[in-house]
Image (cartoon, rainbow, N blue to C red; front, side, top):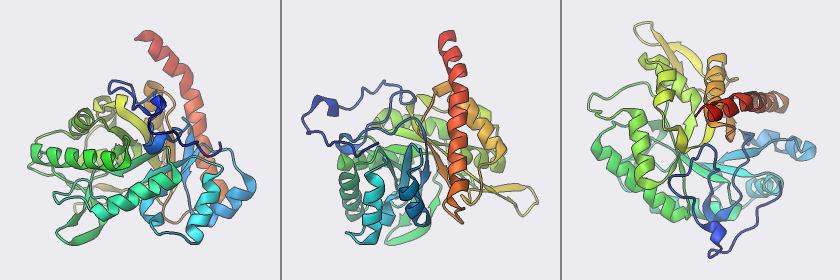
Length: 320
């Protein structure tokens, strides 16, 4: 799993895959033609785990980093990340582009992101269907947006601008939500499908977000996944949620990323990969991270689920 060779920009291998290509079974090719992520499990890279990882070289598919944590020029964070990148593929996950904002994208932020992608050649880059900036202010949260024709046009323009800056296809992640907008006129899965159709981007399917939103808003997560444009999925996220209640005493789930993946989410994951096949899958445990063996065990569970789904995937493909 060595560092991917950078291809010449004119190399035919750098041509993007055709738009009709099924992203569930054809890996996403990232900027600068870095090698695509393997269809295996990965985890979010935590500073407290790096020494143990480098000493033990665990059998893992990839590591994912938050882009904004590495936008400085150098220092210890980059030296440690370079050591990880020499051994493992990387996935780059953004939390600060504010793709869903009506304001223009921050050009300086986009330049720093492009420089980071060129430096580390990640297997893919993803961002959230959310907004976090307004006028000159920045909110430290990923906020939902109404699904209207106006916001659809704005998001598509921002996705296209990001892909142009990076020189390759990005993935857009479905959100976890706690409120709905009366002015929404498009369903979330249709909204995501139309973004992928217009821009050629791929999608990051966060299955924990599906279960959290389904519980909070009272819809069927399986029906949501049935309607989701699975052919565009290039990566899956799994995480733990926290249990709470709203003011009326109804169940309210929080996308907390501070605990193991729950059984209902594992069940949805198994059904999803039985349909789309093995797909790069990230275990998100960003807050209160556990000891490395605990996090690694979660990743191994995802690997076993992919292996167990393989026979069902073949049966489904034969039936089509």
